[in-house]
Length: 215
Image (tube, rainbow, N blue to C red; front, side, top):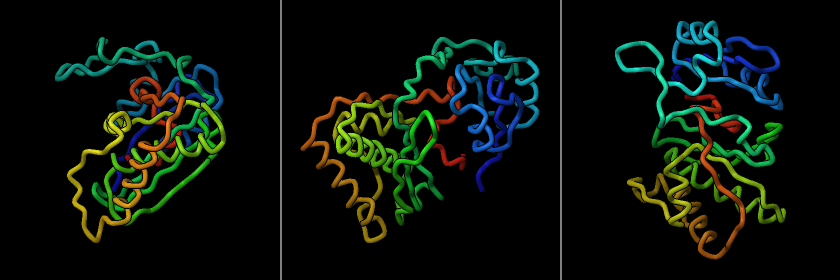
């Protein structure tokens, strides 16, 4: 069962604390300079909401102290750096490995542009890789140079290498996803693209717009 998360919206259509990503997303989509962040417990969320965005935006907890402190590595990245004229991709899994599905959405509106799955058995990172390549192929078909966002560092690394690196065995249960991976790697070898493929900065911006809400 997915662990309950709580979403604090400091700046949105209706600021407050929300129990699901869908509720949070409804408040921040198309809201200029939206500020929101997820927390593991209601107590943390309530404290952050009362403290205001200035106290918690882009900060991390100091181990053992319970007092937020600024970290250079996790310094907040302003929301105005998001290119909303883009596609965001994400994966939904039931176990890792397990059934995998992925989708691509319009970052500005949340409109689903494509969705695949569930694929019988795979991993989160393999699904992320497939989603990125699917988005590249989709945009190439539409003669678009839009940016693509993914929150998977591994998938972005594999994209540059044009090849995945995984311990998932090739067997009857994984045949479906390996067929798709082979096809995606072949597409990368045979096609070029001008699109930027960037990391979605979850710590600063909240969950990616294509999130399945299963974390």
